[in-house]
Image (cartoon, rainbow, N blue to C red):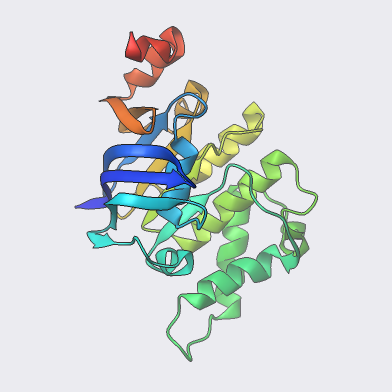
Length: 246
């Protein structure tokens, strides 16, 4: 079964078309990567799937485990198991990391059911240890004063705790040095399983050295123009994106 299916998707911002007849399937249990130049529509695709209000879907459909999610509020999409790691994570002053993740998990529980605090913190600390995050982070406001690497580790921590059915990572390597990249990639790889499909958006091959995809897709002018095995990323690195249209 496909975790994510995108069918003949057209989308625009204002009067400007950005996605045009985009088709993509992410089978359950696989990691796919999308690569492409700036302005090719990669981040727009992420925002459309997540339900960003600035973008209008004019035609087509997006299915999460066979269910259309277009028209759903972003919160509903999240509760169905969708997770988006942002290229530029937002700061949330006054909300600690521990309380933020706890509230997200609580929101998924049936009405009247409470998250058990002892189990929650035991799991949170275990995941933080995996990512090399010090325990003091639990008391810090989400992303406030964080370095680029700290922001990305925080997002991967959220993903590890929420255990989504579909995860989309929008240029999660942006602003990371090599050590931070390895830690973030190890967290992503720890989540790989037959229960989750992942889509990784990136400009560069280097991320795919650590998160090895099952398939690579090239995006240009708002659509998928080429797909292939993981070695396609190496060809792009060597030849550039103009090679695709040559």
